Image 1 (cartoon, rainbow, N blue to C red):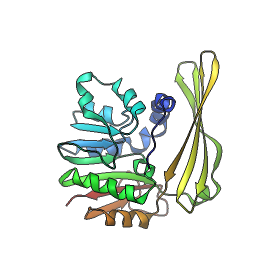
Image 2: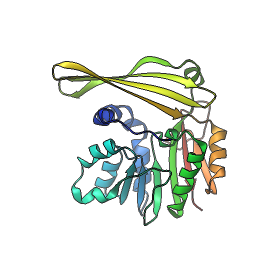
Image 3: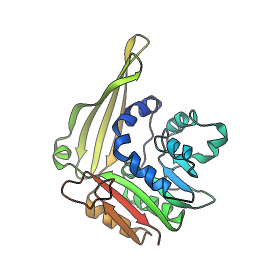
Image 4: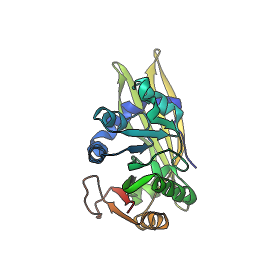
Length: 251
């Protein structure tokens, strides 16, 4: 099971996530891209938060996403002669006529795969598209047990302007399903347009993971070796870790 971004949310994605995520993971992923000589694939490329910078720096990067609305926003930023780099595909069963030296699935892509069968299919499909010695990197958050148990109610995680004089607010509520390890998230957008405040809502599930579950998941796949880090600086996992950064190698 996977989810796609509706058009309204794709429209404001850059405004929200350049603010919330760039200082968190951008330097790490751009560093991984810069250190790769061959072809690179970004799974869940979205509106190009990472993709555009990588391409401008000369990376031979390709991107796929299951959301046509997100890809539509990205294409508006590219010359048409670069459209060949983008495809509307799913991590579970994407295909390319060539292989990659690095595949990235940044910012919770794997968490959109609810079923364990799809998770394994995704890992194995990435493995099959890597050259020998290639790497697959994905991330998930370390679950906050208090928040999982209690959920969130009308938490404002972004408030600003999407253009001069036009306000935008995002409000998040969550309801945990602990048995199925799913967080049911409700996003609400409020924005000013045409002299009124407009609203949109999007509900989606995210699958959360624990450390040893991630280890077992990768061990069940075709990958022979992997390492889980506790942040985007390459530090070991600790009680203070907020991220699982999983680096899988095709030996």
